[in-house]
Image (cartoon, chains in turn green, red):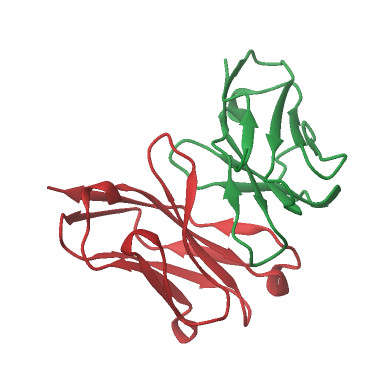
Length: 114
Length: 116
């Protein structure tokens, strides 16, 4: 496909469960970003990768959040022992290179923790 | 640290009248600035970008923005609002020289309402 693909589109998890969210970026895009968007808020930076290297993870809210991009393409955001405050839309974006290339966003994964 | 401030959380205009959505940023000499739009239950779409070329940037759907370094502003405008412009708009800054990282920082958003 031509765009950024995220799966699942919706995820409902019981408090304490682990979840894994997948992002398939645009082919050839070097950089990949994860954002968290709470209801009525702007996207908040979580982490980003250049190829397989995770260069900034300063936005991850706790050590329950973990992201990887082992082959420099598909990325997975994992949340362990989910809490209600983790409920949000998780957005993935990719860009051709670093710094001044626009981000191309997927449609997001809406996570609801009950 | 780099930051971006959207001065209005909500803006209402009548169809056919001008739109002004305000954005101020803190940055070093050469930031990259973007405007994105998010329609309800849709993904974020790039409207336009500024990356140190012309200070007046034209985007899609008749939108444009002007980079004013002296005012650290990057306001989004459109001469005539259309009903389909109703959405949430985000101003975004990327400034690796200031922040030491390539992360893109989003403003809190401005919800544009267009009245018939």
